[in-house]
Each structure stands twice: as structure tokens, then as C-alpha cells.
Image 1 (tube, rainbow, N blue to C red):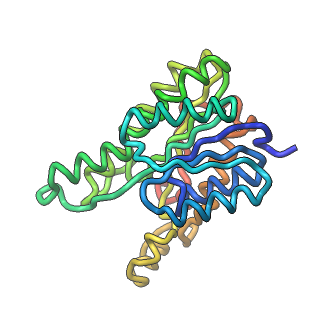
Image 2: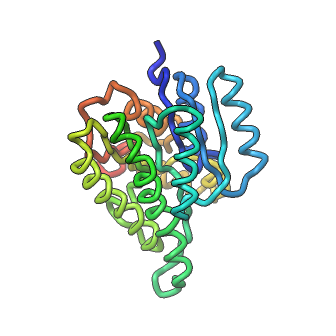
Length: 248
């Protein structure tokens, strides 16, 4: 029996990096995978066909999860077509890094809306279905930056720290209905985005991590799989760091 057999999972922002890895791993474990994306049409088509080739149902939706109404609409569609929503992974995120003195209001709003408001939008949208089912797992992607802050990322750090407070509150609100809500705080994960950075700088980051390497998207996906499955049935309201010991 696969860990997510007969479960329907929604993963936001899934066409690359951590989100893509989570979508693939969930499909490998038998889940129906619904994913959102905002622009990468070709990558989305590719991901959809890759997931379908694993013998599960899959569907991509193109819209911005920072907008409230499309989130409601998509969840209604998913419930109609697939019968339930058992897992949601709020993974969509952007950065607009700059020092506060140079940060525009637009750079602040974009990051807060995409990273934090989207978590409210999606959780609100799936709540009704999960309450009816009396089961569900909500997994919110935070960051070590949300735990410890980072110069030049006040907007990003605020959005990711906000996710931690939201996660704990939702765990308290929905726990009596057997709905769990946890956060994952990845550290330095090597993705396409980090591949474009200066190698010497990246190596100095690796050297500062106790495990002496950057993480892989699969390292985060493994934890998401655990939190999505019944293996973590007694875990809620937690922030789990996947950071190679960075915050130790």
C-alpha cells in the first residue's frame, strides 16, 4: 500500500524546485495531484504528463494563489471532479530582495501577498471540505529566514514568519476535527535559483552548514510526504527545519 493511496493533494507553485519535487513524490506514493502555477505553461504541461505517466490522476491550474476568488473556485472544481481534498501544500513563493531603505511598497506587497496571503486563501478554501471529512493535512512552506531573519529580506522574512504564527493558530482551531497543520522551514536548498549564483559564494554557505552541503528538493519533499501521510497522525502545530543543522 502506498502512503498516499486514495488521497487528493493540492500543491501550489509546483512547476520547479521544491514544489515539483513534492508533486512527483506524492504521485509516486499514489496521490491524485492537483497543482497550481502562474506562468510556466510549458513546464506545467510537462509536469502534468509526467505525473499522469505515474498512473495517478493529475491536473494543473493556472492562476495566482495571491488572489482569493480563484483559490475558492479551484477547490470547488477539485472537490466536484475528484471527490475530496486531503492534503494541501502551500508552497508558492517569491523573493524581491533588497535592503529596507531601497524596498518599494510594491516589493513588500508582492511578497506578502504571494507568500502569506496565498496561505490564508488556500487554507480558507479547503477548510470547509476538510471539516466535512473530519480529516486533512495542511502543510505550509516557511523558511529558516522566517525563524531567524535575514538582512535584505525583510519582506520575505516577515511573510515566512507570518506563516509560522498562522500555522500554530490553524492547528489550534482545527485540531478537534482531526485536521493537522504544520510548517516546514527549509534552509539552503540547491535548486535552479541557486544554480545561477556565484559558485564560490555558494560553497562558503555549504561550509557554514554542519552537514557541509546544501539540501536537495527531495530532502524537503520527504518531510512533506511524512506530514501528508498518516505516519504523522499525532503531529500538528509544529515547525520542522530541513536545514542540515544551520539553526542548531
